[in-house]
Image: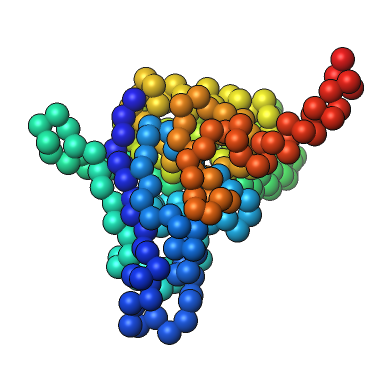
Length: 289
């Protein structure tokens, strides 16, 4: 297990109010000081928990921008956001046995739920393009196979080659060679899990923004297994914004409850949403017997 990012410091109320250039409370100013959170300490797996609008995705974006982590899908940033990152936020990396600071590993990144949705949609669009190419290839095959080309000039050379090719092959072979093969489409959950599996590499820091959005419970459990394997055996560090009870239950994870004021580190079973789940299933316990 490895920890690359050791801590992150947010602005205090005084720091924000001393900003002479700030004329109004624009995003992301005015969010975290009133939650009474400044210093965040990280473990190998750290969770930001909270309801919609609690600031967990904003916090993840602040860390990603401060560390200059690459991302696939842009977010609604602004000059004020960049100003906040540069002027108000500090971070500290871990040190090695000799006291030297450990740099954030190259290849570390932030992965958002939008990245997953785009991945699935792009695969579908690619298949639509392939289907159109295959349909064109079928029409070309029929025209070439049953048409008649007389080689009376060099201008007809390519058409003659196409005709000979079509007459020597089946339509399936002809179409496959010119149209390509469709990308195998799995369920959204299978595609999302496969995406994470391909993205995770040894010795990296990963920020995950609500990775559960495309995953059913069974795939969330499989994602937990993948995260634990990467953390325990591949020296990866994870910082995750989530409200999934499955992810929050990862043993040993440090959880920041952004719904509480002041923000506190809690056990997963102390979180409000988890208690609501518990009461719901407790009230319906007899239905499962």
